[in-house]
Length: 270
Length: 235
Image 1: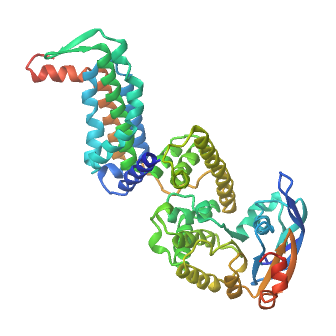
Image 2: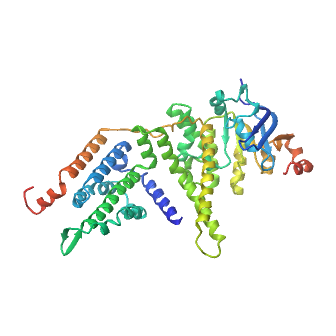
Image 3: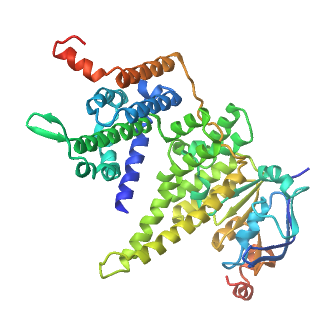
């Protein structure tokens, strides 16, 4: 539970950064959403073993973080919290694929290690870009951007309510765990049975709260869609930014940017 | 046409599991009255309140707000004139910031932007919470949450204010401030509470609920001094 607690605090801290005023923050949320989606697509679609191709793409989140004055450490910490998932996905690759495909100095690199590293790098890039989007746009900005881009109403409403109530739910969960700890003097960890009952109670309480929140929303005239509270403006700067981003991603993905830059650096013709 | 009158006639309601919560409750509350609703746990207070703005519809009998019966067809109209302050402000503050939460009602009423803005400002001022406007609800204290929730209801400029346990979970100073605030409102008020001292201060009239029926209805002073009645109704 403390782990979830910490993760939520990080999200809260990231969201607080969204209140800053920088050129990145001033961009229309829709533009940042589309650019981030393009970025994720470029990263995810690049070939598994072409590790170096990812390097130029890293420029996007790094530049956004720097221009948006978001501390790298904060994003790094959030990435670490989520990293076990990515590690689990790729951790067996080095065991299965032992064919040596490259030599880095004295180091013989197998295909398995390369793809494992590649998975980690992709995770860091895509999740980092998503966190950057959150830190420069804010949860509500992302939500209203999604709504205006035509995402289903129910999805957008859920997205916004999730952000509001995840803190309440985590609080209730933390209290239940504490109550359990106080009455289990043996110090032995809770059994599956206890956890099941605990989770069940949380679920029931969340369901009850959902009904009450819905009643409160209806009482104030809710008709199925959240009112648009923050006006969005798509200006010329937004279009230029989006076009530049997408062009860069295309170049990095299809133009073998890393390879060509490397050749340039060592003085060879591209 | 006045929307300030609240009338219940022989209200009956049972929850889907068969628990009968209301068994023929009747009363009439006039324009500008301030009425306390008391009763033991499970007496039907919350169920009754939820009928007043149509969150629940009665199985028998009817509720009228002014000349309008509360039915599925009149819900929008009824909810505009009856403002409901829920027991747990966490249930009511569902928007990302206090300002947006207060704007939720007026925005749903399709009011123009500057009118929404004016109402948000005025309601927050009325509860002394202007400084909370940009804050997310999960970073507020209990008293601040309560104030914000009330502002959200005031912004719809209701005729009738219905409140479920408004003083629960408040420290003594926040409670005093809340009572002062509510005493200043000129709306028709219906306040359900276990806090009998607050009822005594705010409401000249009290309705006692017992097992889904109105056990007593009259001036607060006499009723809260009637030990036998309070004892019988579990108070």
